[in-house]
Amino acid sequence: MIQLRQPHSHDYTALPDIDATDAGLLTADDFACLAEVGRCLVEQRANHRFGMTLLHSHFPILDDEILLEETQLDRQTVNLRPTKGAREGLAVTSLCFDVATAGLGLVGLEFVHASSLGSVPLLADEDAGVLGQVHTILQQRAMLERFGVRLLHDALGLQDRVLLETCDTARRLLTCTTTLEDDLAFVNAIPTLFQWDLAPTDNGPITSQGCMQFCRNVRKCIRSRGGHEAGGTSHESSHDDRF
Image 1 (cartoon, helix red, strand yellow):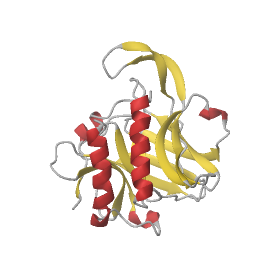
Image 2: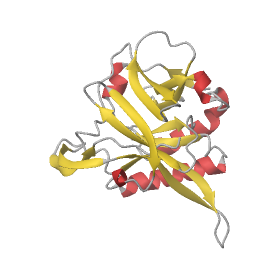
Image 3: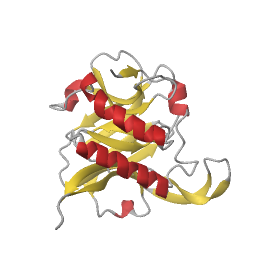
């Protein structure tokens, strides 16, 4: 059974600031973990339902706030901003595993009006089996605080387009606009949302990993997760997000 709780400010604070740390530098261990998760999702036929996210933060979130996604179809944009107030009618779309909870504990990080999901089923106890397997993989690889889970959805009908996300830190606003993947904004981008599919080969289908979300970077002095400072890349905020 899934134990899903609402987020608190410390849940967001625990996420590494991708602007100020090297959290966006993916290692061989990261890719090995993602590959194992991808094989699991494909084997369980859940690869079109769930993707994996690189956990990170953009700005502080207060205890009485959640990150709410809103779609503007006429402008072909998706906005994410901290929101207060009633939470009825909302559905979780991005979450992480609760390392302090015994069993399958989950923390909601991003939400959307449930009606915006269309035909996408809400997170339910029926998902506990595959999410439990993902949890086991992350736990065995010490990656529970590195990667989270995304409920895949596509409010804009992107097809061959992608979403480029820009971050307005002062206003605490993330704005995603649609574009094509050959946009120059993808130069030196950090992949932050992963999805898997089966790709045909001469020897039969294989699991193929795709990157659906990116953070565009600028070079600056950053703090490593170990606390050291070094030259590196930082989030200027561009995401390719096909959900």
